Length: 395
Image (tube, rainbow, N blue to C red; front, side):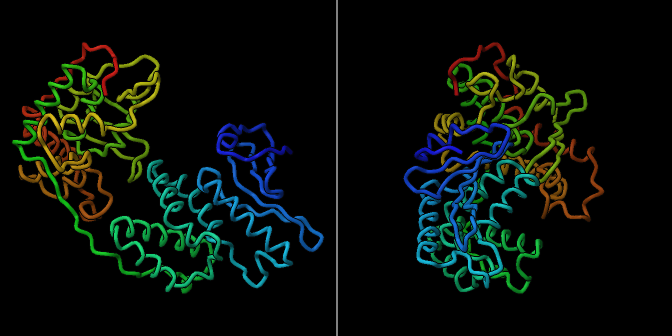
């Protein structure tokens, strides 16, 4: 047991010792952080009530903000000092925060790392401030509707937050924490969204390819970033799938990438000849397991925004996002006559395109599709990378 003033710097430096340890705050007695043997840390509040010591977990340190945890601890300790029970016996369900913590742990084990991180961020910024301290069984439909309505200025974000909230309550139902009839968020209407479909035209693609080659040649864009951008268009893969791609996932002789995890689970990405040429030209960095190497030794590139922005600026292309390169791959395929079910398999869609009735589609059809994409875009994109460049400060 140790006592110190809890700060963000102190929390960041906590390391496991092989046994459960507690660090208690000097400024607020009873408020502390628990360090588990495996390294997981969580805020806790401890107090005595009815001659017994009670300890409540407020939430994981990487999920709950320090200031918010401290304020919540103050509220609980104040209620205890006034002779109140912070969690009356008649309220038998845990707090939303507690269930959300379990939901996030479940999500991290079942979903892609980026998906779990997105869930955690939205829970922290949009959901917990309103519902975190409430008993999950006491949250009403009217409260959820009011919360959702308050975010109508950002409909897409509001709808995503609602989706996560629904998932937390559904998790609680499956765990029998609340009954199915107590689910307060099910069936709440989402806001209409103006979805923007943006695709590269062939003329824009020619400018994009020329700009990319020029920036790579002058070392403004690194060969790794250039390869990633080319692969996004040639494969229709998600940017997260390319950025986390390891050499051990690449099967050159079979012409396939075998991803152990992705947004839709385990996934194979069929490669065209042009995509294979890009991969063969990528410089391998000693000590780095990743195809798209980052600036720091042994680490991967984490974002394509800077090199992508530089290419779009030079090519005079506006209103395009990195994710639109994936859309463009689908657009080129469908324009060339490739059927939607096959396009869906190429993109790795878990729904819409790839419903059960399309399960008979084989790799041969996918390979034909990616070769069709390559034939349409390869000459304009330029599949050769400048492999002779040494790693410098390029993006």
